[in-house]
Image (tube, rainbow, N blue to C red; front, side):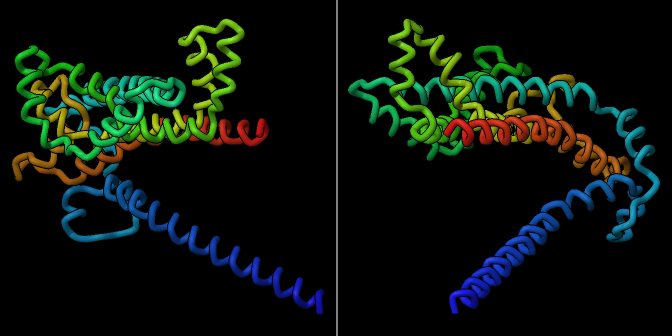
Length: 286
């Protein structure tokens, strides 16, 4: 009887595991299918795209890419601009958000709960509400067509701060900070040498999110950047899609979208290794 129960239990576990694998395969398929369609459309001409949908690649990839590079838009410059803005935003956002979370988590002062609540309340304010005042301020400061308004404000990221704060509560014991202080470590040295390595998995996750968010951001750059040489890729893609119908080429649009995805994929694969490695290291230490 006991053997039969164990056998039924084992079969139930295998059935649930099989169902889980099937669901994961289906979800993965639907997630990757649209990327496949994107790259297929990048290999087709504008005329082929107007004739309908197909799963087979065309032979216009090189021609579409060549026409894109020789077009009026500075594609390589836009790529460089997006990399600069996104990379600096990711670094500054994760570093200062981690530092802010560290201050709220470690230090005990009267206004700590109020500041924590105030920072979270900022998350409720839509970006569009403050856009007009932000643009007017940047105009008066002479910072239009400049990357500073796109990079420095990312330091104040309530969502990233909240994630770091929650992660610290489970990964950063206060006794470790106290031990570092007793050993004579300064606050900045403690933060940079002890806290940041412990926060590596969380930093990698938020760096990916911040990089992708900044990379795909169209709203703020479109308000600040006016010269073609300063524009980022999302603005250039919008300009390409808004071209005159006599010059409009959907094949070039798909090629440019595919072109803009590759750097994001590279960043994800690099940082995802750090996530897995950091989680594995943390489990071994635990």
